[in-house]
Image (cartoon, rainbow over all chains, first blue to last red; front, top):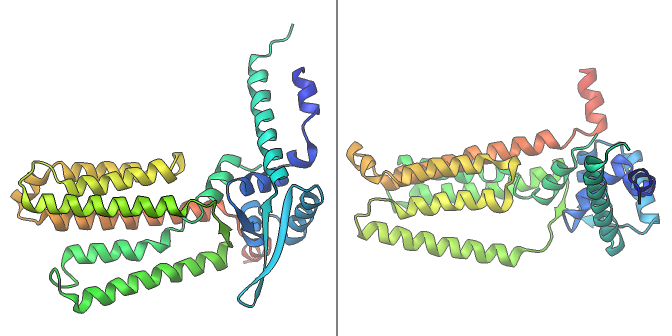
Length: 106
Length: 195
């Protein structure tokens, strides 16, 4: 596949910067709560909720609501599918980077 | 744009970057080394100070949880517990050998330096190079026990104080790394700008 075709084939659901940051963070832990993800991304509550909902609808992220003491707490974690998808995405980006470095105009 | 390598590192190492947790323990070791908590084995001040340092470890944990949220680590606690146990046994053995023999190097100090290098190697990367630098400092101290004896200072106390200081410096730098990576909440930002 040519470099430009590979770029076009990137999954836009995952490649959007905030969602890529969320998925990358979740790939480094078992789960993280809403406050941590908000601190990490700097998104407003509404924006973060919207991104998490999209990822949950796509089956990439699992959202669990629980109580820590008396305080409600929302935990997000990657599903098996989400973990495979973000790994695949990173591999594709790495391939793209090395292909782009080798690419010469003919 | 997000620095995704940093995002991955800070999330994976969130627990270890909670540097304020270990600062009281480092201060306790420094105070112990300077003799401000009484002579070796005198528990009048040493035990309450140790309990206070341990209590502050948990208080700092609560602070991080309230301010930055919760991250559940990928399960590796059994391996970590084993590593700590091995480190403790090696440290006690090194200390016993140092007490008996007149070695040209301090095994206890080498053990402390190895611990700092291990922190850098296992939980470090380029974001926590300060542990490698602190390890080198500790290594230099361990290789010069005879020089310390000539100054009249107790080598054990020098090493303990240096290790405590390394904990304090490492903890503060870890805390700064965490606070510089995690962003203020959008409403906090608005408040800061208004002020």
